[in-house]
Length: 145
Image (cartoon, rainbow, N blue to C red; front, side, top):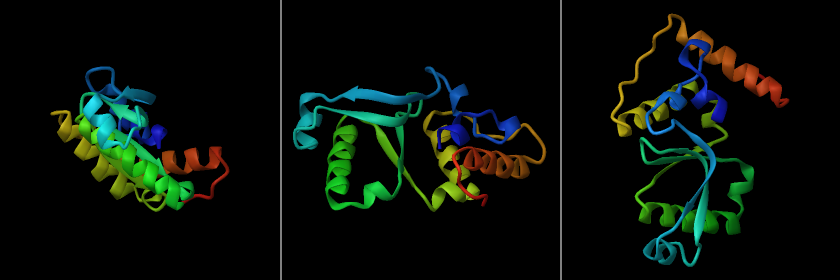
């Protein structure tokens, strides 16, 4: 997920790292205010998978582990705490990670929230995206899409 959203567009990514305020931060900790702690049922902080400060957004990947009941409850609490801190949480699941059109729509939404223009600067961007996604998947032993 981080690769697709951070790699420059000329290589098939969505280039969120080029956004203002530092681009993106992986595994970024956000300490909750007292009100956010109450909203999160006592959870004092959240660690964001991919935090985008310019958009005030947290991009989370939820694989199969997040389908367990206890994990869903904890995810809901942390998301409430992040909401209390003014952070928008976007969740990507396994099905969306193979849907380039869905990933592009999410990237466009993040650019909008950061008041930045989303536009491709390289021809053949869809083929580049597919090649990048399949290359990243091959790197971790997953089949191509």
